[in-house]
Image (tube, rainbow, N blue to C red; front, side, top):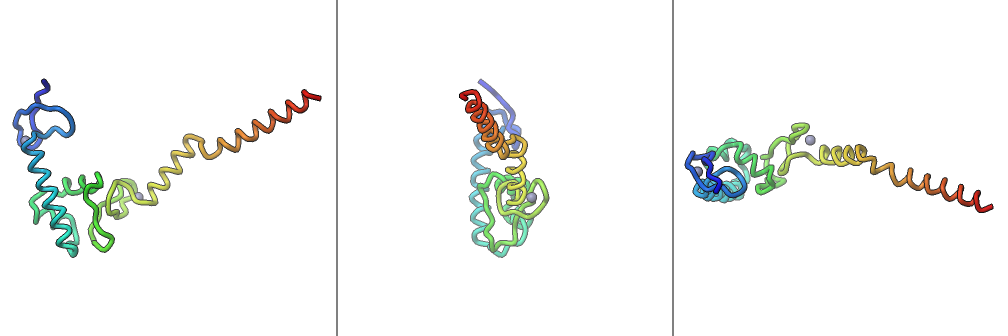
Length: 137
Ligand SMILES: [Zn+2]
Ligand SMILES: [Zn+2]
């Protein structure tokens, strides 16, 4: 048995998996999530996360976390958003803006050499084929 202290209320509980929060707090958090989601849907003119956090009595960081987990998404017509973790541009959900996501994908491909490999391989194959023909003669 894995007993831990709840990060929110400090109560000892039987920890299984996921965030270190007791079932009661997790349930309360889930209820908060629904409340925030509902609030955002009903208040499309809400212009910043702080006002939502105050209205729903939840931490700003908690709301941001839900947005980063893509559980919460702000509509395109909403003025609300969170910052891209890389460049700080405003985004509606997730962790990075489209530009950074593209840059990162490209960076990964470059790092793995995936975008050059097929060409190099073809060249090597061509060289090999030429050599074979030469030996055949
Ligand atoms: Zn708790
Ligand atoms: Zn960005």
